[in-house]
Length: 99
Image (cartoon, rainbow, N blue to C red):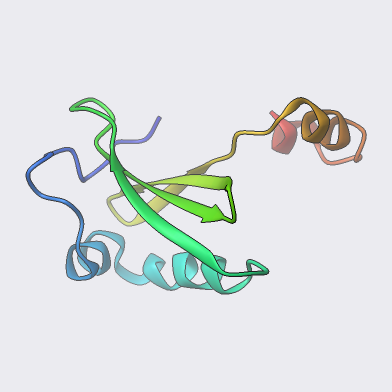
């Protein structure tokens, strides 16, 4: 996984730190949040000194994605249940995207 810039437990991310770390890419994170249907909850969670702080986007009771902030960009991880995995596999999406 990409190198998270927020590894220090005693320094949770702030909007100013986020903007500085992402630079011009911060607008894409904001765009992503605007394109999600429904009210999302943003939750920063610390997963240890190797993984660091991760932003969870939550819709209702579901975790939508996990976002790691890196220098100049962010990486998104999705966790899908069995039903969603089957739908994705049958969707015709490119193999590289499905992995």
